[in-house]
Length: 118
Image (cartoon, rainbow, N blue to C red):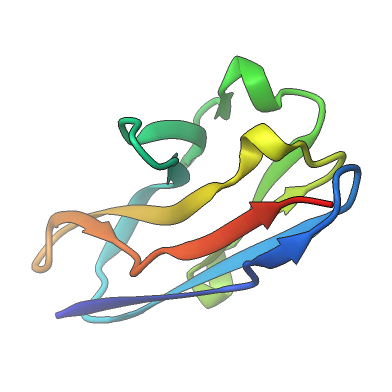
């Protein structure tokens, strides 16, 4: 079993910053990718940023230059630093972790609400 625990969401004013964290634990052989997705009300879930192990990082065009994804492989943790937040960034943010080996699968966090409003 693999568990993902997210933290760091909340309410922030436009132009502000937040940092999301997602820690993976349990029976993990190897992580091949970690990333963040978001879903706004009435919209489909969309990719925000994804960091494959040893590969190139991908960002949604809407967040390039404002958001930064990073990983601490020793802690199996992925972060999303969000700067210059806009109201349109309001959504539930989900971390996603791809794992190979005995617990192979695509795992999702429970989601954390990010609200950007004055």
